[in-house]
Image 1 (spheres, rainbow, N blue to C red):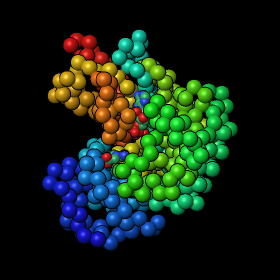
Image 2: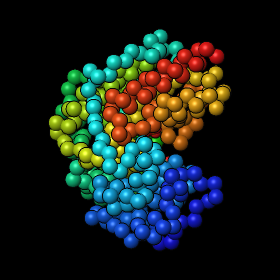
Image 3: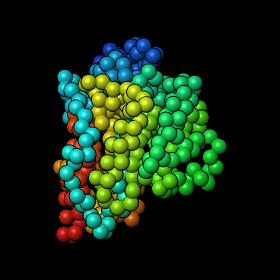
Length: 342
Ligand code: ADP
Ligand code: IOM
């Protein structure tokens, strides 16, 4: 494998940190599961417009390819090589109100965490048999959930395209054919082994075998962030009674993309900011100040529509779950106050 030829305008972290020296040092390394540098960087090489462009194949990838992952983790999360990640998913520590009680600006709130099963490689190199096994284990456990979390599992295989498209359009289901995931090896054997579990109200959902083996999601209309957090904390607790997730003292929960390490939590609101978003500089200054990320209305790599944005916490490692949500809450309060003043 030769050193990749990145276009001049490439802004991904891969092209920033994969120097020729780092490449030469890592190019012949392999994890015990057979994950190579070529596999780790393929997504960013094929898609120079990636924001990061690097994926892991297993827990060991973060050690074997540390010369590439460490600076990315440091820049993205502000988290150093010798730090320890500490989790705190206790809703009692989250002392927040609804930042928009009349739902004038916040349309909906969603909090998700990514998880992968201990004892399995990550989705980038998982075998078909292992992926099917993950689907069986997770959907089996979910089927036993009761009360507010009770629901049904819908495998992607056999789902009509009308149902699939409706679920995607309404923000409940992952999209199909994502080129970033494709090049990372995460779409192999599609649609086998993938699916979505949800309760009747679609306030609790679990994606199986997308970018991570589980994406555990709590969402609802309006801005009651705390209610969404409480539901998610309960669901994660229930799942942990039955399965062990891949984690380490240093990196917290292990995920296929380094942006999701630690809490693997993305807490977001869909919020109307038609005035503030006209002033791009101010919008960026405020979101940067509160460590927030701006996404479009259909998630990562999508565009905003009608002045509505997906605003979420950017940092996920080195801060707790409670702190991730506080980043969102504090930032959203400020965004709302500025929007109203304009
Ligand atoms: P992830 O959040 O898992 O990283 P995406 O950014 O692709 O993945 O978002 C997945 C889906 O969740 C998209 O359809 C997106 O529009 C939807 N979504 C994200 N935040 C919200 C929200 N606050 N309200 C409603 N839907 C949301
Ligand atoms: N998490 C992942 N989908 N993303 C950061 C991809 C990228 O743009 O590099």
